[in-house]
Length: 552
Image 1 (cartoon, one colour):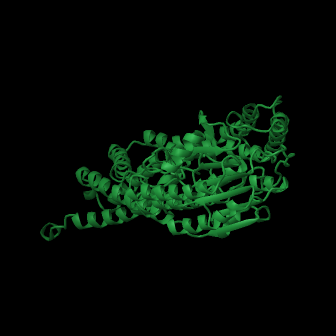
Image 2 (spheres, rainbow, N blue to C red):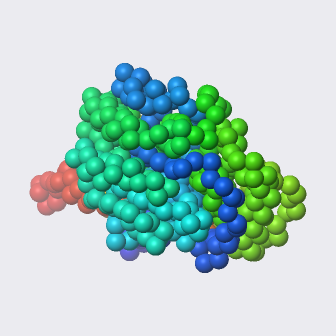
Image 3 (cartoon, rainbow, N blue to C red):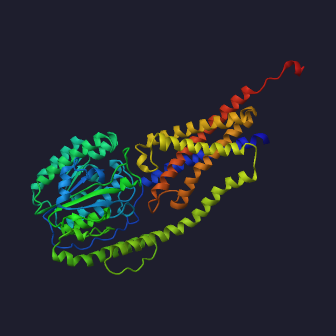
């Protein structure tokens, strides 16, 4: 029985790893979907309106997924190029996760995804929560301004509809849907009583996901059509009285997709033109600067959870608005800092003046203090768990250990060669075009890589001739070695971010590698058990039969 105890323990270990990896992976993604801001239940209160508007109307055109390189190509987007020459332009920067729903929340609340209380990933329509934090539309309503939205139907759930006077929403994402969106919005632009109009054009994002990505011809064609629609919108405006803003919510990787921390997904074009705008090319801005800047143009209050600043260098505001801004900024940022401090249970540092960067630095100090306090015990535990298998391997060196370790390293090389080289995938959430497709790809790749390693290790080493029990035990040991190396990114994520998403959003790169590795562990564990059975069968077939003459 003792001879079989090692095999039984290995099989139980693989089964346990597979179960743990499954529940951890599903729990990690579910916790991302369920994430809510620390300010969810106790948002900072909105302040007073800044005063007189600098514009008759702000028209906010959001071209979904438009990359900066596409936006700057005058042959593809000549209308946008002309507007850029007439107005103020810059490159905008966002933060992960670079999905659309978090991006919309940042654009309209001025708060980063961790605080905006918008979804952290794209949720289904029925699951989308309405903003709990102050936002541009609610601020406009309090200032007595009228608003309108035309675009994808996610906005119907995100924006409080009591702050929207006119609306058109569509579940479509292609050119036909955009045509309907713009047709619904154009009559509004003749109404002087509408002061804030959001028009969402979605076909560029659609082309990236469904027509080959940003390097395909469909992408440029979609961008050109979006540019023509932008031209129709601009033609209805009197830029001596109105202000037009054009930007996007994220970019896309070359293969199509977004959601991760890839640099190309985290930069966006920014063009603002019309009354109240000082033309010129400006240094880079942050996405959180847009909501407070538009609020200042409208004379509304700064959105209460905004983490950005008013881009005063680009604006020509009324004198009373300029005079009110320092006090309004100080009060808004101070209230945000105090609300965050209360939610974190960490005292807020003292900040004086109206420097938004100083307040945000204090906020980060609070966040980092709590994160560091929680990371230390996790890091110790992760180090212990990670070292135990290595110590056991050293203390209980057995015949074949070098083969198992070499096989595990070969598995890693094969697995990542297919993923990064043959398939050209990136190590970020941007590579997940569909949950099922992602799981199937990782499982198949893991099983195929383990199959090659099984052949490389078991046949040359002669382990298949060692008897059914020993052969099966050798394959289990190989699978456990592969799972051990796969577990290292998971342990790093655990030490850095915690097991699941709780009060803060994780560092997206390590979180993705953990999710990726957990699915691979499931594949390796299942395939390891399959190959263990196959090895036992082959070993039994290869065992020499007894010679009857000798036995007599």
